[in-house]
Length: 382
Image (cartoon, rainbow, N blue to C red; front, side, top):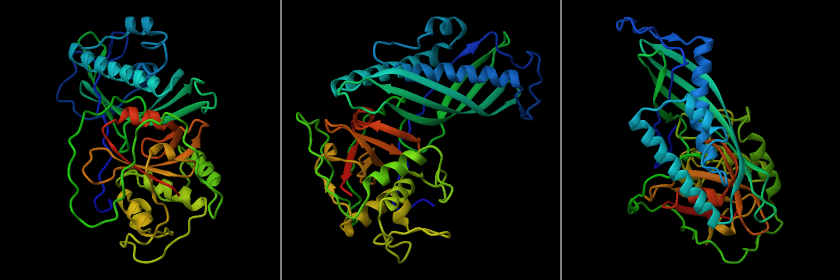
């Protein structure tokens, strides 16, 4: 189900090309009429995994302090060939990530280590082309700049690779496309600048955007004890960020699971259901058979919480604390695209966010802002 005014998060579609003469390919004389897809054998699957691992690892490594590429880039470069056009695309991606590393440094953030592991989920060959679906799990180690940053941030991405057989018996990677419907991953290049679009004019409680200006002094927490258990919200989110809670339905294929996930965490911390019509945004509930649109919809959640005065807007994103919520309108079109929960905050006031749809744990606010500097942000005090 795609709730009203829901817009899927902008996701960068990247391209790269890799070819290795040592990799297996269909015979050069294969009949082009033989178009029936077949599963790749084990050795070919392993070759595809090495290609995906090489390209995706280079991206995460580009964010690591004092590293321009993978630690073994010399050996990889010797074994990996890239077509000219697609090599330019991948070089542009790495330059974009290098620029982001510089922006992060200005915000007091750096990474000392990157680790990416790739698993091939499915690989089929049709004639002289291959389609490969992979999942990558990446971990970045935070440099202790302020002293109490989390140890790491981690994220999981799903990609689809297209490869073409080469005449010398290798494979050429023609495209890599994200299969996630959430925001761009930590190691994805920043989206191009967008033009601000006026709201659609409908009278909804859309809320007030938060300032993203980096504070010169630490922001006080401002949170006090009350009816909600904010630690329980954070524990829930960090437990189920990648291994989804089987007690709830998933909405990855129906507009995204981000708000569903945040609603679960808020409920775990004490938020109470508001029963009523599923399509009235003033209600908020979930049961075995259905749920309110405000439980799963980005905009509807905002309308619910503001109309019920359950979570007012904050003036600055740097006022966010554990258990608070951040939403993003990536293209500034008046429709919010993504929902995240703060699960950690260091003593200098930097929030760290955990979310579904491009499943991620403890991503710093600095990283989010550096990846989407042209977006509009809404911060909520739960």
